[in-house]
Length: 505
Ligand SMILES: Cc1cc2nc3c(=O)[nH]c(=O)nc-3n(C[C@H](O)[C@H](O)[C@H](O)COP(=O)(O)OP(=O)(O)OC[C@H]3O[C@@H](n4cnc5c(N)ncnc54)[C@H](O)[C@@H]3O)c2cc1C
Image (tube, rainbow, N blue to C red; front, side, top):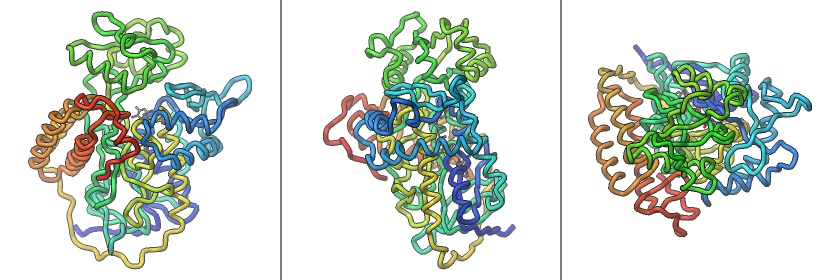
């Protein structure tokens, strides 16, 4: 079968908050083609529980939000990007509300009901249906995108690589339902989300295989901060993939962490006990697990509050035979968010002409070494808006690359590919997870090389997994200190010489 070719003014890859928002806003300036690997709703965005941070409350201000974001980022944030995030965030949230997002409102005043999360100095978390904010954001944006006459959506379209032409990005090569397809576009926007699937324990959906990082790296695009992975301390400890998240807000309401000897071990670790920063809680839990103990969240005293405040979490626990009002909830840390990614400027431009990146796959610098809770949906909205306005100004391609014949290689051995993926996830969890060291990282590097060399023909997603894992390992080996989400047992402290320094790959 011959290669099919599609031409579009703008091409957006990914249907999370960042891709959907870019497509919606860019359609004002031209035709948009939106590709997504599975369905429009398959994204981390749909999973987000807690909410969107924005300085909208009385007594709050972008300045206070800025300070909290910078403090979480451990001296690695880009000050200008943080400024943009906090200043433009409130308008984006209002706009989403005007577009139909049903955020929770105060019953007496009708104003947005704002929650508080760890490391935020004010109540500023906008949420929907209690703990289903992401699904509401996705629903709102999907409605906009589906209705728009200038946006064409192709689901089950997996981007494989960028099309490079005369030193610029001219579009992508994709498998559209198994059919070799070239999409030629004046501008390509990668909004492919994160890479939690490189780890055995993750809260990220199965689509989060790091495709965007690997695709960009293969094309020579600059990435940075790949060592900074945020591990959420409390995912529901089951044999599933992905793991269900038990939001920090449950600890915020008073749930405690205990080991199977009934000891509340966080008290000894930090003055804020269970509400210590995510990385500290995650490491303390990992330490318990290494000592052979299981860890549980005890939310029994929340009882009725639990059903009212966390209906989503309650039903996902009940579906697995756990009733948090009576039972202890088994928890484990899990890979949750990638702070690093494709380096972009404030307009979403990458180091490659005609390629933009937005959302989790990008590295705008707003998160630094550690993301402040609920800042990622916000980042998706704010920088997608900026990227959409910027791409309107990009000139049409002067010439298109010549079409050449190629085929989508069918995966010969799905079982073998699955074994490889499991191996990668295991290696990463053991040696490149919550606690890292030079010896573990070197062993991971070697083992990943071996797995990569033995991947079966056609295992393109697993290839992306290996390459993204290798980027994390390389950056983690080079950063000989501990900072934010990156912790090395052989260099357990932050070092002055690493302050403000980024590892680019
Ligand atoms: C369980 C959970 C809870 C969270 N809670 C919050 C929260 O409360 N607040 C907050 O701010 N953040 C939260 N986050 C983080 C936040 O959800 C994500 O960072 C954010 O949604 C990322 O948006 P995105 O648009 O960049 O990527 P995603 O929403 O992940 O979307 C990526 C899209 O790209 C597609 N894609 C990937 N590869 C390809 C390819 N090769 N070809 C075609 N398409 C591709 C995917 O299918 C998907 O549609 C949470 C994350 C998780 C997992």
